[in-house]
Image (tube, helix red, strand yellow):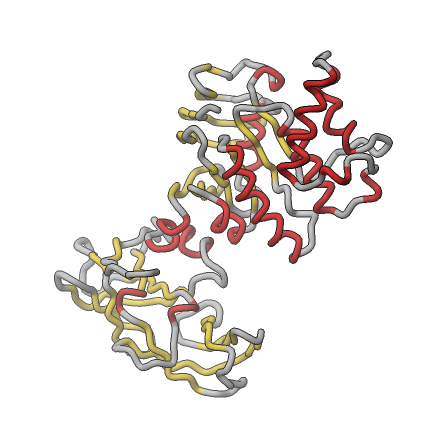
Length: 369
């Protein structure tokens, strides 16, 4: 196993900068997920680590070795792509064994490694089949098995679940988590799906426009996002953002005024804010409730999604670019045109300055959460 260190890494294609000054340390045995919107540079960063793209600037280490000019085959990595890239004329066994056979590895050692990988992935009963006889999830397991048999120091995964249906993606997330627990190997995983990132990662690297916005555990990013971008990207459905104005503060909270005149208390520290400053209030849909907490908002329902266990009410409100999303209990009966009295606790509020930087939240201890 090995850690991965990037120091000032950049990548350009001609005059176009794809990645700029990336500093990152991925610890030995860690499961790190790169996440961000399309075009943010996450797959390019993975390809730089793999050696499939040349680094334009900076230094990269795998373990103690500088690998800027080391070819992919000598980096001690194995990569699994979005496309399974299996040989259609070969059995699953031969697909997994092929790379080892090219290295002239003894037949009994090849067999031991293939059987071991197949057992880990639960496909030992499928080894004589061809790829066309398998489901998408089974094919992806074979692609992962082909990587496992190489016994790499670092696993790289480039959106490996994108071709699977929703139910199978959920199942395969569990499989990836179990695989990491079993192998205890450094894993770097790229996805555009923040739910995958939240459920799999030890730490998440959030990228935007070729730069790292924030690195942290899933809970760190959820509870203490550094800025509006991270706050809006992490969490499903996304956070609601409401225009606000600073009114006053004390040692424990800040009071802001919304466009409809409502006053909202936020349990944040904002020592640099002044009366009249334009701010942005953030409230997650799951923290908006019909229980009348100290902070109350009145909004008109425009659309309702009933999903059984949960109901999403979309509500018009002054000072929002898009309707507020409210996550309500599935037994709640609301319809378009209803007026909702919503409440939110002060310690469930997020606050951002005019530049989009988050003020630090004063979080209470939440036992059992």
